[in-house]
Amino acid sequence: MTRAHDLFVAAQRHIPGGVNSPVRAFRGVGGDPVFFERAAGPHVFDADGTRYIDYVGSWGPMILGHAHPEVIAAVAERIQKGLSFGAPTEQETWMADKVCELVPSMDLVRMVSSGTEATMSALRLARGFTGRDKVVKFEGCYHGHVDSLLVKAGSGALTFGEPSSPGVPAALAELTITLRYNDLDQVRDAFAASGDQIAAIIVEPVAGNMNCIPPVPGFLEGLRELCDQHGAVLIFDEVMTGFRVARGGAQAYYGIRPDLTTLGKVIGGGMPVGAFGGRREIMERLSPLGPVYQAGTLSGNPVAMAAGLKTLELVSVPDFYEVLGARTERLAAGLVERAGAAGIPLTTNQVGGMFGFFFTDAAQVTSYEEATACDQDRFRAFFHGMLRRGVYLAPSAFEAGFVSSAHGQAEIDATLDAAAETFAEIAA
Ligand code: PMP
Image (tube, rainbow, N blue to C red):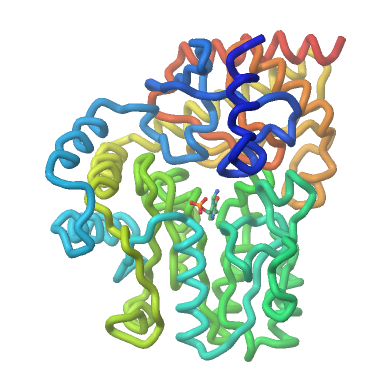
C-alpha cells in the first residue's frame, strides 16, 4: 500500500471528498488520487518519492515547468518585504503595463485572485455596460463556478455528469443561453430571436474543458460580427489559452479582437491570480471610475505579482512559443503514431502548448457531441497505464493537456515509449 491511500483517507476526514477542487479526486478515472510532495521542471514527485512526467502543470500555469529557479528567486525576494498590503504597489503597474503590451485588445486591466473571479466580474461588467441581462455561452465550455456560467459546463462538472449545478437559481440560469460550440448558425438564430437582450457572448477561444477543441474556421470571426451587429460584448475567456497558445493568447493566434478578455493560470506563474480587461470604454464603467462594483482584499497581491511578472518576462523571449508548439506537436503526432502501431484509433488536437487526445475512429473532433462520444473506458485504461509508467496526465477525458518549456526531447521520448507500451497493453 502506498502512502497516497493513507493520505487520501486522512484527507476525507475534514475535506469534502478529500479534495479542494473536484477533478483532483480521480472520480473520472477511478482509484486514489496521487498526493504530490514537490515538483521540479517537467516532473512532479508524489508522497512516496515516485517521479512522474507532468502534463497537467497545475492545470496550465506551469508553462516554464515547476519551480523555475528565476520565478522562485523573484518570489523569495519579494516575500521578505511583506505578504500583502491592501494598498497599491508598483508591481501592479508593471503587471498591468506588461499585460496590455502583450494583449493589445486590453486598454485597462484589473487583477483578481482566480479565473472564476475574472469571468464573474467580466460578466457583471458586460451586463452593466449594456444594460442587458442575457448571456450566451457554449456547451462544454467551463468559465469557473460562476452561477450564470455553471450551465451545461465542462471540466469537473462534465466529468461528474452534472454540467448544470443545483444551487444555481433557475431565475439566473434562464438568462444563460447555451449553444453548441463551433455552431455559428445556432448563434445567429439566438441573436435573431433575442439579440437586443444579449449582454455578452463568453467563449473559450480554444475549448480546453471538454478535452481540447479548437475553433473551426469562421466561428470566432462570426461571433465577433454578431456582437458588432447587435451591440453585445464579446468576452474571450483566455484563462487557459492566455500566454499558452501564443504570447498574445488565442486572440493573437486567430487574429480576433474581443471586447473583454479574462486571464488566469500562466499570468500568476502558479500563484492565485486572475485578471480581466479590455476596451477602455467598457473598463471605465468599473468602480471606482464607474458604477459597476468589483473588489478584492488580496487583488494584485505583491508576491503573486512577482511570480506572474517573472513568468511573463520568461515567456516573452524570442521563439518561446514556436519551440513549445513544435514540442507539443511532436508529442501529439507521436501519440497517434504509437496508437496506430497498436491498432488503436486515436485523434489529437493541438494548439501551441495545449493538446488533447481522443479514443475515436473520427478523423477530427470539433464538437462537444464528438468529444463526449469517445471511448471513456479506453481513456481510463490509458490514464492508469501511463501513471504506472511514470506519466501524469489529467485524470479526466474532458481536460486539455499542457506541455512546458521544461519538457525536453528526453521527456517527450520517454512519454511516447510509455504510450507505446500502454497502447499495446490496452489492445491486448
Ligand atoms: N475559465 C477557464 C477557461 C478555465 O479553464 C478555468 C479553470 N480551469 C476557469 C475559467 C476558472 O479558473 P479558476 O479555477 O482559477 O477559478
